[in-house]
Length: 361
Image: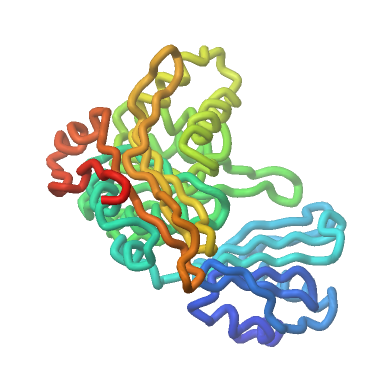
């Protein structure tokens, strides 16, 4: 696909392993992200018509179309990269293309540790949590590495399990043998044929899954996911956009209520607290690099409020002399029954992983 003439101006960017995102704002303005930092590059794409032609070339293999009546699309390229395109009249200055590249440079949890995304002890906890069938939410803003971490940690699921992945736009490429991949379907040109995330979650329950992985919970499928866990489908992993673990709890609450069922709020709180074990919070550090800034456990419900406790927290010390993020992860131990849950699955958390740290030690 990258051989096509219309793509030649951006081919080097598409093939550059250090470029993680390409943002085409117009024929004379292209930005990329390298090493967590955004910078403009000197690339000329002719005029708006050429950018529109580029959009149509990228879309062609998907069988989808874009028009003033349907002015935006999300899809993936053959290499797994994720693309969003949007055109006038909603894009006022012409067609816009955003490509989030699929990268194979991060394949294991050790790779994330080497990138200083998390500490070795945090990695040990998360590996044990996945193997021990805890239910984990990966939270953060767009581009903070949630899906990457989810995909990498999914590599610790046994080959003996039947894994069903459900995504809006498929990105996850798990290496296990027994993986079923499901993808939502947008409406056709007549507004028909939509297949939603909630429908796929409900259908997955009839497919004998031992693990369900949801690429991103955005709506009332949150309730289906919670009920799936509470009916015995443990070890679920999912992504939720949230600025903090507390924000994730609020979002799950609101999304569950979107179903319109007469479920009291206290019951929603109890379902969330019973279903979710850990929240892995992702953020950008001051230098633009990605960090897992918190691993938070759900302790329970008190006075109808979900109680959270940060097991690991990243403490920023600003920037070092080289302009890189400086900081440390500190552990505050575990307060809930997380360790017991993991051990019931026959998995042990390595000794010293949850040792309480003191600042400055």
